[in-house]
Image (cartoon, rainbow, N blue to C red; front, side, top):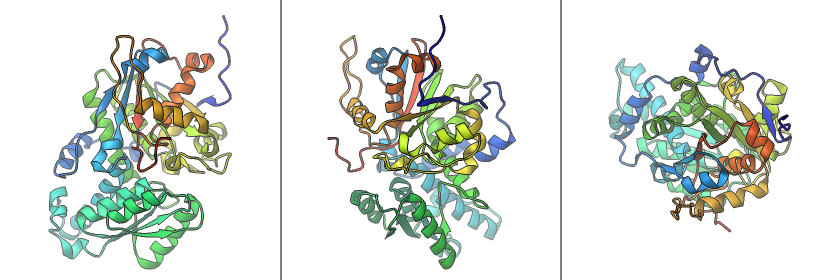
Length: 394
């Protein structure tokens, strides 16, 4: 019996080789060394807690897979998104590096929170362009260590997200354009004013800080490894510019043998990774990135992530806009399992539930289900990357 062809919204990665070692090019992007120690150091921050990894047996039974588990980043650092890790760790790395260069000695997270080296750190002004979550993270990091922060927001960012950034002490500059326009304006003003950009996307000559941001994200993956034995066989991760997907795929690739099957999930209008896979190199999205999934509204990838995602992602898929709300509702109001028990309710935003929307689409299409190798023996990992963040569940 022949296997039906995969649907047009699902594309296999011809470069992915499951026996490919995690090499130097990958370690340059996502360095797995020292992450357990970083997780311990984060314990010095009073706001840090390990986020839960929820088991959803009812959903797994409904979809015909063995297990579904969701890493719930809606509870990260008390502000509701995985990006808290990236911005906070990147700001910390800049300041600790400055102290190290000044005194040729290491400092600690706690020492910087106590402002023990103001002669080195006080003049730093941090800035970034963001659709909301990353900006809040950078603002939180700057506030934690007592530094000024300026955030550039694209036109579509909600008033609630702007208010959340201002609540963390940052100044906000609205840009009359999309995310890429905000990035350009941020770069222009940072160069003119001598500010330090903490961006989660890279460009020519700028990749050290985006790699530092991704290093922060690997903390949540280390938590998953400690929370789940034997771990996932399939990983659905939503991708904007690629920072989260690269951190998750890269760290699991480095730690597991054999590694899981990796699937990138994107909105149809912001399919820069889907198009890059087809082109075999970084390429622009086919649409204008006009999507309710604001955290994924990106027209181009972060180039520094290509050596990981471009070689490790086994499949790339897109999801439709009308798949978002059902996924959010399913997280928020789960159905009971066959045993009568109900899965835990999870608060998720439009971008946060994108991985679940991808899994639902794959599991309701027979050809996609078979192509991805899903079945009763599958253990599926999802990342709830954000809570509702003031966006009501209609």
